[in-house]
Image (tube, rainbow, N blue to C red; front, side, top):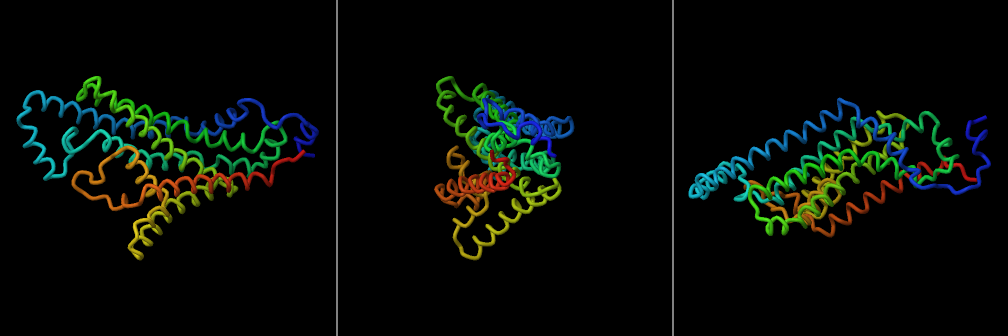
Length: 306
């Protein structure tokens, strides 16, 4: 006889209590807190921050020591496609570049650590036990998604604030820095949307599989094939809107638009940013809803109904 039939089989109370999702989130988060993935993920962010900090310091000193040489230096930088903050590289574009790189690193972190977030519960037949307790499917899904999101969102938000504070200290007066606060907010929104896409996609694929290897394979196939298919459709039809088929391309356009980043970076055009903002936003929302539906449907079949 299953354990849940011996204990909570005749439970008729509320299906959910306050913060029931948090233990699920903590359990999901634990693989990310292991020293190796945490160190690698943190090091990637640290390297980017060091490069940005050195760039800020050098640019600020150059403006202070030889302000008359800035225009000439800018022309040289543009010729060799080297970004100089405050001249051919704005704060919005810098934060956008960081988020674009961070999105890729985050996908690798999710792939390396939480492929078994739901598949392990399926493999160990733990889902009937979960749902025999006063824990609903919604609480379980919320806990899983929150557990995947928190670490990347925390690191990314901290990095955004560090970059913003350094830029404000070196290049902006207080009124100018206050004018940049909306950019700070939109950067966090763009980061959150990237974290949400990564987390709900992994949760969906993990709910479909019984092993972490299968979930990881589905995760890799989706993110690679969606970009490849989107590129092929764009080239064959000549319509940039097909790029919205790829959630990563759609997110890039969405982030660039709400942050006001420049379409051309360092003298190179960004063709994937030709997707309309409406199409990009709709694509992101539909992908999130689709993954949530897949996850809930795969879990609903094992829920213990009283």
